[in-house]
Length: 378
Image 1 (spheres, one colour):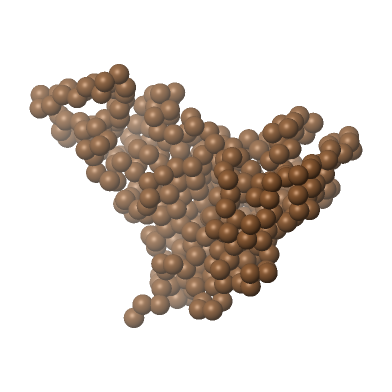
Image 2: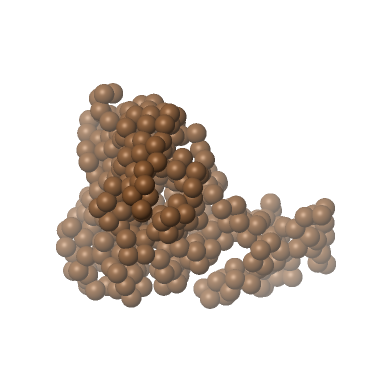
């Protein structure tokens, strides 16, 4: 699980900024929203438009692009446009896998990875300076890494060379990363290494029962079917040797294929399978514009279900829905607000740092300006 993330000169964040997923002393939702070893099952980032909320989760996306999505990473897209061009972009990720702590640090300029370092329980496993590096296995044998491309990771090169056959912790860490998924609800795209997570593959492999069971649990008045053809007394659809999701309404003898459905239902069918699978497979599910097309109550139900059912998985979301800022759904240490300060870039605040009491209304406190992160609108 992700334990900490530190970023400097990344996108709109100039100063060193840290996201901490270690649970604080709050007793709220202790059995649901954190693990037995005190790691939070995710966080929410709220704030005004164009303050840098999405850039926080893009720091996680950057790691996934670099290590597991086989993407040709364009480093200049991530470098802070507020800092001096000579300043390095610095990112540090800390994970707990099994009982080990993994720390991965990377430094870049606009076009080149200048340094990488991987440690496991404080012991250096990999180091890369400019285009060359060295990997040390558990037996202490060293492997040279030469001529790494300037925008590609030496760590990823080692993984594809030997799959960390000598290190089960690193293997499990990469599986955690490979099973993670990034969802942009506003622009309707999903990024993942595991194609089984995509909607069509989900229904092919899992059927409709799990999806419908969730809808029934929250008393949703609709269910889905996954069929190659559909017919009722009003209309008939034949999908020509493929199957499609049909949304069925309890109070009507009619179903509609997804292309004719509301934006909300289309989004639900695209996003919910990723969440359900992320609960079962230890990984991260990262959702930008979580409030796009979802009703507030549906948002609450999805988050609550994830927190209750996930074991070693985490959910990171960006949302404008202030109703999610409640102690019945999220702990104060899971809530971050983001401000944009002219000339200085984005600033991040953790609600628990203000030490609100468990009985206080976090939404009202946020809207009154106690936790920062409010748009400057008069």
